Structure formats: C-alpha cells, structure tokens
Image 1 (cartoon, rainbow, N blue to C red):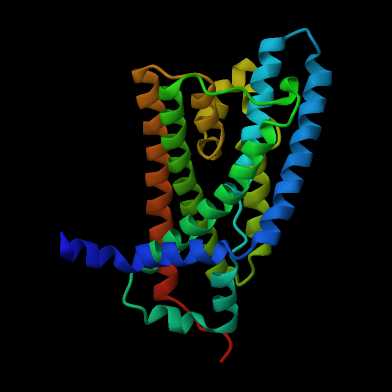
Image 2 (image 1 turned 30 degrees about the horizontal axis):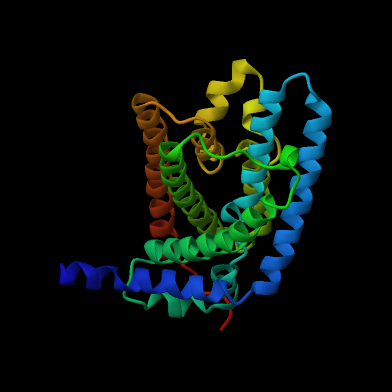
Length: 269
C-alpha cells in the first residue's frame, strides 16, 4: 500500500498544488461569478418569455438546467496556459526530465485547476439562489439518490474534459499554436455540451444522438440525473457511456502524447 501511494504521490501533489494556485485568483473568481449570474438571469428571462405559462413544467426544468450550466461553466474551460508556454519557450525540456508519466501528470494538474475553480463559483451561486424570487430559482434535485448520481456523473464529466484537454495539448505540441484547435474544441463543446442551449430542448428525433455524444457527458448527462433520478438500468447505461468515452479519449490522448514526446523538437533556447 505504501509503495502504491508513493507511486501516486507526484500526481496527487501536482493536483493539490494546482488547486491551491487556483485559490489565489479570487478577483477572477468574483468577476466570473458576476458574469455567470448575469448570463444566467438573461437566459432565465428569455426562456420565461418563450414558454410563458404554456408549459410550466418544461420552464421549471429549463431554469434549473440554466443555473446548473452557469454553476459548472468553469469546469469545462481551462485557462491554464502553462504547458503551451513551456512548449513555445523551450521549457518543455525541463518537463521531460521529471520521472513521471507526463500525460497523467498534466491531466491531474488540469483536474485540480478545473475542480477548485468551479467550486469557487459554485458556493456563492448557491447563495444567490436564496435571494432570487421563487420563479427565477433552480429546483432542488429529484431526491438524495439523484444528488448522488449527479455528483458521480459530474466527476466523470470533469475527467472526460481533462482527457479532451490533453488531446488538445498533444495537437499544440505539433502545431505550436493552440488558437486554432482551442477555438474548434471550445465552440463544439459549448454547443454540444448543453452550455448554450439545453440539449433537452433539441427535437425528439435527435435526443438519443445528443444525449450520448461525447460532449454531452460533461454537463448534460449530470444535469439529467439531477432533474430525474434514474432507475438502476438507466443509471448504469449513463455511467457506462461516460466511462466509455473517458476510456476512448484517454487511449487517444496517451497515444498522441507518446508519439509527440518521442518526436519532440525543443523550441527556444
């Protein structure tokens, strides 16, 4: 057990240090909080005007979806440019001498940053819910079991996004410019994760496709579990889909990292 812990120690340490570093950006967290509350209210007003009193159940679910969108927005998007800077400056040479699995190391670092950044915005936004008028508030989860399903699904979604980010980093090692791939990934993610329009509002004919594509595993899948406690077979299917995409992205990411590290050209000097 001690030897296994020693093996994991570097990865747990970088996760903890990245999380502590993220807590220093309190002004940025406050600015993000104000932004997310503002956009959350804008979306709520728009959907209230769209549904009116014609479909109060759908309106209630959509308002909850919107607030959960905003609460976990930062979990999907990372602003950590450390690896890109190392690649462009030549500092990546120092990274390569660390006696660690480079892919796992940077994924753990990404997990720490995204998780703490999301929590720093989540807690104040929960407090905001108590001061909003009742029609503008999010609904409570569909029971304690739904909350457990939601939390587990959200964690798996976070890991999926970190593995996707590792794939993006592997592309940057080749292109030396993250703007193109980041713009493509971020636009696709915002659209198909449910961050712009709740995926539950897409046509019924597209629901199966929308629900099980990879980007939906980050945000849409957890929110659906929050709103409706899944039966054991459905819950197992949802988790299996998330684990499946997590495994696929991990295999692709590790293969790309291995190829790039074996053919690394150090820039700068």
